[in-house]
Length: 390
Image 1 (cartoon, rainbow, N blue to C red):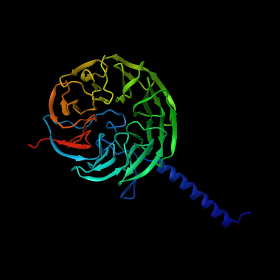
Image 2 (image 1 turned 60 degrees about the vertical axis):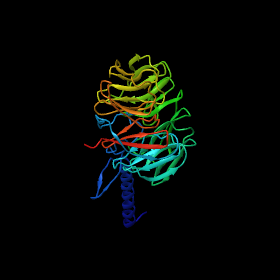
Image 3 (image 1 turned 30 degrees about the vertical axis):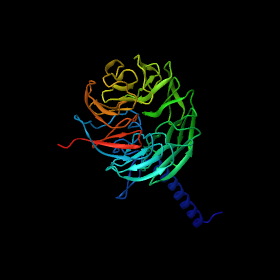
Image 4 (image 1 turned 90 degrees about the horizontal axis):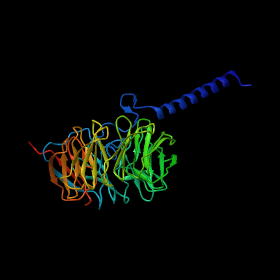
């Protein structure tokens, strides 16, 4: 039998151990909580980043919260960041940019100077900023990597090439769609949390619709729980070419290879199905404006705008076929680079506001911040365009 003193010591140890477990659990689940006076526990990707991931946000809306200039900008600088194709940068709150290319990942300062370059071969797309301020990106062969400070800080084998930009969740875990026809999630330490098989080839990047993950595979749009369980699915009748891009109401928009635009609700019902009769530009994307209308690039009809109910609003065909990515700003203006290498801005009615020659090809969506428009080129460079001086 334990003595009173021994029993007291044992009880105290049990209480301390239980408190430690509870404290540990609280740290995992907590949102930013001030500790003392100067320390904050990181949770989630900071909303201060103007463009933290592929297509700007976890809904893949390709919408900037800033307004594009109403008059033609001037080129402030052009910096070599790699070789060949360069992807749109991820822009942090301090103006620094993680840029992916065929050579690896480069960190670029707001003035265009290179802070560091990590040569690791072709990456999957725009890096995604993590809660710690590092960058996650798909690498070869079939890996996901977290980089920062000029080195690889974490890596995990996926089993297939990663498609586009990883989706970063609030706890720092990463969701990727891969060419092994599966959706994967890894925790912040690189441990696999789930692998969900998909019925067809992955299209686009995984997106977030409230408490669901959204992915397009083959002819289907799937909504899955954060644990990887497919909750709803909808067949759209043809292979998906672009999307998903998720609207503010949670609906996922996709465009099929046959030119049919669909909006799929989180319950799996198809709210909109409109045969637009256009040829999608497979290297482009869908962009959703603040009013819920969409912009898309086509190989035969230029830039096309569609209202939130799915009806066509306008086409801008004067600059010919558009094959690259596009971005919509806070006022409904559209930014895109034409096949001739001209960066153009269209107003909310599809009229051309201005155009400037970049001197290079680009299929990346222009990235609009408060201070500049960034254009990633096929010549291994990143350009910054700023408003002209008064």
